Image (cartoon, rainbow, N blue to C red; front, side, top):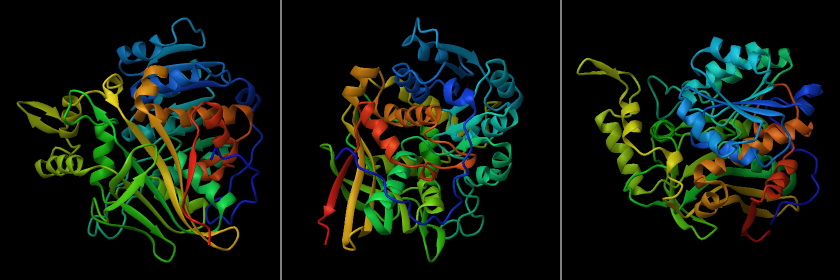
Amino acid sequence: MDGTGALGPPCDSIGPAVVPRRPHPEVQFVMRILVIGAGGVGSAVVGIAARRSFFQHMVVADYDPRRVEHALVQVAGDPRFSGASVDASSIASMVALIRNERITHVLNAVDPRFVMPIFDACLEAGVDYMDMAMSLSTPHPDRPYELPGLKLGDEQFAKAAAWEAAGRLAFVGMGVEPGLSDVFARYAADELFSEIDEAGVRDGANLVVDGYDFAPGFSIWTTIEECLNPPIIWEADRGWFTLPPFSEPEVFDFPGGIGPVECVQVEHEEVLLIPRWVKVKRATFKYGLGNEFINVLKVLHTLGLDKTAPVSVKGVSVSPRDVVAACLPDPAGLGDRMHGQTCAGLWVTGTGKDGKPRQVYLYHVVDSDWTWAEYGAQAVVWQTAINPVAALELLAAGTWSGAGVLGPEAFAPKPFLDKLVEYGSPWGMREETPAG
């Protein structure tokens, strides 16, 4: 299924509504984008955006000029792209760059440690913001495997009123996960279900990397954060609560030739976003990590190598997690060695529009050999990057607009899903059980 069809009326919302605003002329017709972060995802954003015409200029910025150079090689000769140096921890540095380059939109493509300074710099500079991962969580000090502490995105939502008052949009969680599955949740509510029992993100892959026994396809810094923090769940009659890492294993059968993969509970933004705009009885996130990957993460935790607080090593202060990241291959450089498919999707159960029981899996499968041949990027980073580019195009056209701190669920889903098809990377839907 390619997702075509007319949209019905939106379902009842239990979170803040979109605050419409007329797009500024320069946003609708002259979009100047600053991409902060020239790693795997930032570089893939450049390659995807280069084939589109919705923006006037894109500045790619990073603390490491070599990464910027590498990202821009693929668009050599295209005057719409340029590079810059920036410190993502310095609000002043980012505000100056935004103003000097007359930026209208900032895409945050660095790891979540830098969400808040970039987020705050955009508000100060008066530009719209987009990220693919939200502000970090802090476990509950006494009952971490029962109650949430500071949740993912809490720091951003706490400033929603300021963004709304400024008439600016902070578009949060618009990668693949979070991002695409959040769009699927809104689509399921609008088009497929009259009542949703569970909206459960289920991600899995059969990717292999030649020459490496352990080579994560995404930032290990972010992976450790997600997988070792207490996973969070939403239930309508209970609210948000937490469980121990790797809880509730289940085998999920993924499409695209991937097949059955064991998935476990992982902390992720979708569980914090979906219930704010989509009425569901339960929201979960399970990821197909595999036993080997889980064992590596458990060993890192046991040895304290997942910690971020610096330790002294022969007089040098270093973060253990940064050392782990430095010892592993850069995910951006794995494209020619990575093979297989990765699948991101949302499993939805409940009552269909016809009043009968329904269960579907909405999904997006990407093949790494194809992304490497077509874009020079491995599948995981490319699948992440296509979503913010498509979202920016909808904002540039005025198809999507709003003010405040909004997630993907706050916007009409069909234009985005149609855009994926237009980009040559269609989504799919599998009926898990017949209606009725």
